[in-house]
Length: 239
Image 1 (cartoon, rainbow, N blue to C red):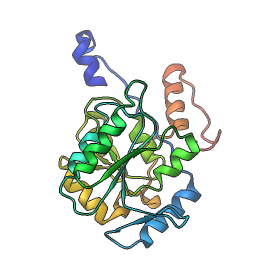
Image 2: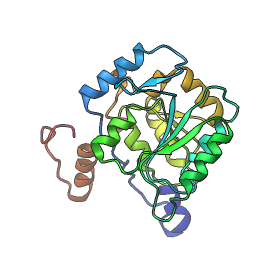
Image 3: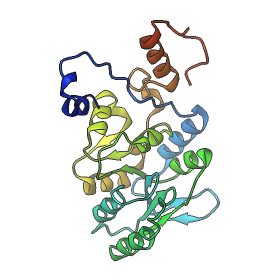
Image 4: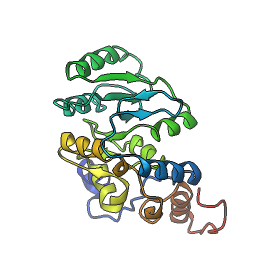
């Protein structure tokens, strides 16, 4: 964002600009730790994934957020071409208004490669976190530059998503390499993650709040910049 500011508002070049990192809250400890332990107990190269209710599903590769052109579902499907094991590509969320036709189109594209595609529809916060913790491989591969909230949601669910080159993701990878996997070869990265799904989880022991400030920490820093006042560290916990 600072680079964009200097590019489009040249008068700001050379002036001091403070960058406030977008906050990412740590996952809820209980579900996160249990999911991490569960992931570590699973055998490599899973041919199926249980929903916990006795239903067996093929491995699921998921993209989180609204479904619209350029979100990354197309890239994921193409990257899975040639993979012998059937995979279900899942959109965690609903289609953006006017883009409902993408669902059958993406399913048709996936089936041409021996896979399938579906969307969950709208998920509230609790259901979205639960879904994010139950897919096999999380991915963020947008075609457009943005400060994506999707990657923050994956990370705050305890997942270390596979991400494609993007200015914001590259910044995150530099600050918190333990929180994501940056790749310029999506196909190879997906195959590696499907062979070792635990690589897509954040080890609770590695979480570092200095690398990824929480909402409380980010708000306190912004408040101090605006007012010069410090918010007591013991106010409201870390969330």
